[in-house]
Image (cartoon, rainbow, N blue to C red; front, side):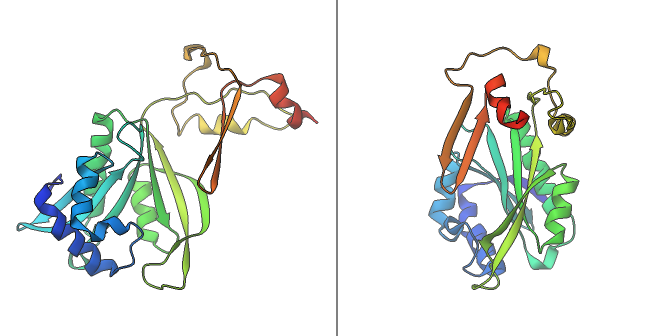
Length: 226
């Protein structure tokens, strides 16, 4: 078996593989259009890898980024031909892209695991992901059109990053300190001080609200103290 990067001539086989396994119901519809698979890879939105046996593609996965400048990627679009499942091929594809993410100096990898697929959750554990969230009824099931499936989100830090250092609030322990080990916390002394016009940044991303705290100030802590 060979694990290698996507080539333009792979697009038709990849599309056919997803159609064979998931019919027409996989969440990323671009996978059903070979030209879009090629375009996504040439635009660096995706970095696809394939598993090949006897010149036949039997597996695929990709690093999916919001744009070519993003430093965070999702390990996504994992599919293995039914005849060769449960042989560690998904892990080898994942490890190949994990190494590639390091080469590209990405900071973070994420993965979404459907709750009903215990093997995908085990794959994430084997690749070093840490569970961080549960998304209820997040995606339509590829096997039951009228059914929604919940998703577990895994995160893996590829580069060290700071986690805020906070003291106890109202006698409660600093739960943020629990993030230090799995997400490779930098010591506060090594963090360069970067001034911000506002200590907190709130952005609306589709149906999600992102909150970024740039500086922990007494004003921000006031609601927690009351």
